[in-house]
Image (cartoon, rainbow, N blue to C red; front, side, top):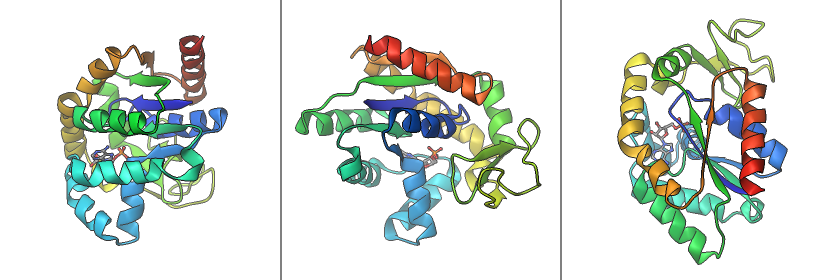
Length: 218
Ligand code: AMP
């Protein structure tokens, strides 16, 4: 299966993507994770991306599209993939369409995670992320780790992402409305969008997503 995951920051895209990719046996490809890996390795690409990410802005398409296509070209993505955080604007969606066409493949669905705005700010401002694995996330109120600052899943150190501060979050939400939401309409015209609510316990949202994707394929 070839799936794109869309949703505002804090919708739980990373968490859901990890579970869905595992259930569907496809790689989870997150452009945010790719950028963060480049930043921690000190690459040129990471240096180019950092200031944009810290401000909550989109990294320019010239950098992002090439990076995403290089990742899609890797062997593990030949049979399918779950894209998390790409495309993030209509230009990127068009570039992805071009890539798919050149490779004679198609998307099977675009899963749109819906969550009210008030919940988005609450989720992100209290979010703590594991340094080892960004899909391991906790919340200072609603999902406390057993030991403060330590990931329950792997023992990694929990930290607050530098772009999870309240001010940056507000900008990321604005950027989402302005740049990313239009891709939902773009994909609706291709009949690809499946919308589900991202509220409730993590495993329930995963189940909802799996059911919706299955119904869509039936
Ligand atoms: P995420 O981990 O998906 O929340 O992404 C974190 C940040 O990485 C975003 O706020 C952007 O600055 C940058 N980023 C991730 N994916 C993209 C993309 N497809 N286009 C531009 N910037 C991106």
